[in-house]
Length: 85
Image 1: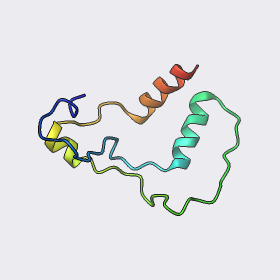
Image 2: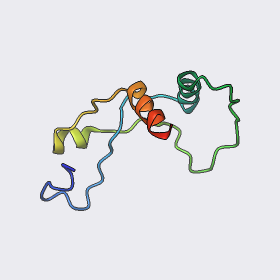
Image 3: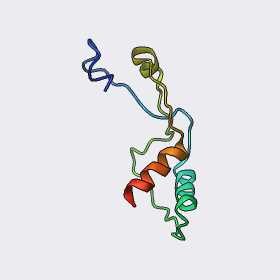
Image 4: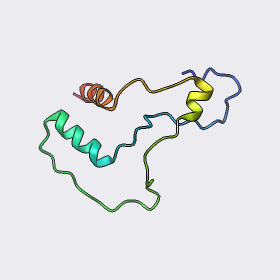
């Protein structure tokens, strides 16, 4: 919301996220653990444009908005899992 109501930022691309890099496999395993799931993880070919790294550069969010992430990955997943229950 802060971005929406900050003047002179129209058209700016600002990444939000956690700058701690975590693999999709790590996230999948964490979700399995948190949900006590016996699901198997399927590995499929990656799309051509799949990013090699998933680590957002949040420097603009820090500089222009004074923003930093405050929710850990585990807490965000816990909230998301609860929502979908």
